[in-house]
Image (cartoon, rainbow, N blue to C red; front, side, top):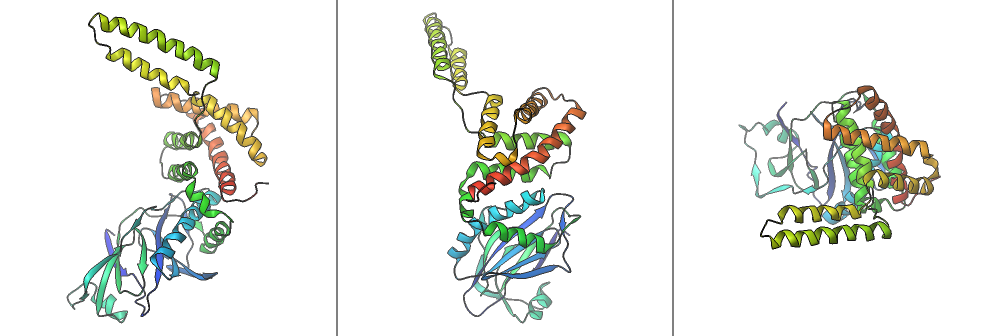
Length: 346
């Protein structure tokens, strides 16, 4: 299937809105739906999961305004990240709201149209607009809308939609769930983690997982004494640069060297990893991060560096550290998620 269309709204008489978000799982995961749709009530909302040709969609209804739906989006997206972490799988979702296309005037559907039977079977004669099933949108349910779908990768093996909703509800119940969306480094790390499951080779998966760790690291500065020595080195090079300029020679390469020295004021990634993990071990003791684990994770980073720089790696060693990171990183992200969402880590 390259293209399909269907009814995309309820066509209500009173103004009302829903939030529609498409999602796909990484290869090897699917939802076990009975039919193509799952519906349930949760609090004041109706949640609907629908299976389309090549993706799923989640619709939350009702909202009184577009603004209400937009506010709920800030809770929903990190909650879907939570599901990805608890299921240890990748879930691909859009993060930016797109606009529903509303026509200047409603369009009558003629009998020659491919949409005629679908529209008339729904009791409509006109269409007010349309949207793409692949997009994150706020749907005006009081309009007669069609929706279209472009092809995407197919899915396999999975878990029940009731579990999906249960875990989603778990995250939505967190006291400060909206704070997760403001934690840019954590959100980026979760997005990178979700994408690693879409990778095909062990090497590409390994690189993604190490990158998750790197994206979490804060910038660490060198000590005052090291910084003093670095300034002395800069001054020496600047003196040499002045001599080069006095001889009428180009100082471009020397200036480039001076600019590179600026990066030496930051701690190397390996040391930043050790500092970060030691801090996490104190913040979240349940992760059981000890010196041996820190040593192995630093080794994983070194393997990644050699892999990227030289393209060389030992397949068996890489697989060993891939298993290590595949187990550790989702646990780390889950723990960081709970801390950011105001949940007390045991």
